[in-house]
Image (cartoon, rainbow, N blue to C red; front, side, top):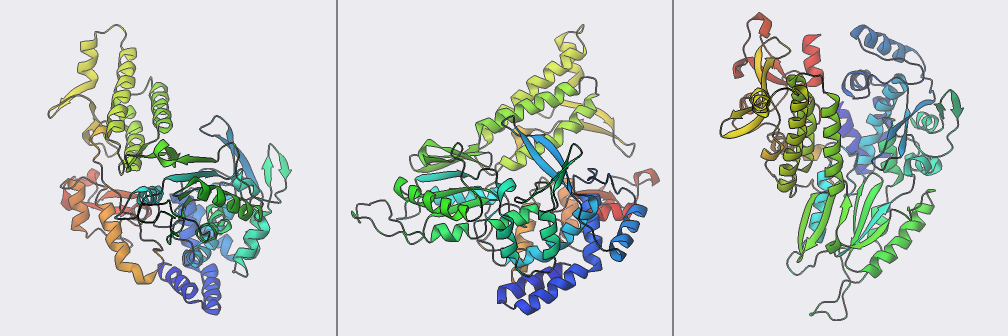
Length: 535
């Protein structure tokens, strides 16, 4: 699979379209692609328990075998999506279109032949829903644009753009034109026009791509491909400097940083941004899209703006990036609601529930100026847990409550911790994740056009994944040593541990058979590989 994706990438990179289409046909018929897609949809993806309109969910190995045989021997029929609504941060509801399990598997198959082709041509500053790229890369590129380097002055103005109803309005004809004669194009057209069921009523879809589909983010990126090139082609004049009082043509062009349908345009003057805004509106109009007048803003960087949950601004020409205040307060409210919902749960359950939420927040913001935010979060979490503990024992003194739920660990007091039993029946201490102890580690931005599908960059990606992955466990810890002992590779599939898949720790000799938690008895595996070991 990996080798075939790389061959597709290389064929597109070299412009060998005949070879490209033949390789894509091979990928479409690949048995390995089918098996991998079924594993991804039914075992790995978080929505694996969410059924489509046919109410089918695949849970057991026997069901997966049957699904494999059915999809190998039966022509695929596209079905409408199931409309669901989830709350947005502004209180409104976001519509999702949930395909059937079989449609999702087929979308994953087509995605594996379409994605490497487009990875070879996607623009360098597109970061959303692409392999090997993240929000952190987008934020780091903004940092690079607003930071002065030598005689070059950082950007001082920004167009904070918002496309109105992007997923609901993107033109089908534009996407179909872009994918051309790609194998699987008929399936893509059928998915785009499959319609959706909402409260028992069928609704047609003549435009847009449903949020919730496996292939939808890729189609969204294809739909907006070319935006960066169009903007960077606009000539504009740099802010006048003492050495060049009349201004000079800026050779680097305006900065465009895009994450799916969210993007910012950066320049050195308001006039340049206004000119870019007009060009963007024309470009979007051809795709049946327009900027939201309400949400699109033109601001000076020194006044600050929010992007992808971060607040970005400059102070005395120095960049300061930190978590956006609205996201921090929203996170605190969410933590409060989670703790309140666990009023009757054990302390062990509360810790188990909170730790992944706290760790996820810390990992997302660990690359920027977040130390004060982490300390604030720790205090707010402590307040909520203190109230939770006191409500459980209204007749007890505060000293009694403190001694029961909060203990001294090392030099730190008031640590929310307890003794319990893990899933293997072993006694262990459960300790709340300390957000405030998260080290701030500067993220290293991905190379401009680098893709994991590029076979010429194999060493670059191995080195990058290892460096990022080693931050997964604290250096010197038992789990770090286990990873180091196995060369940071999964012994089941032979791939690098940090390839984007979830990681679990496996006991070579099971605990129930006398196995220990020593490093010699532990090995890190990809989640799907771990399930394979226990199947």
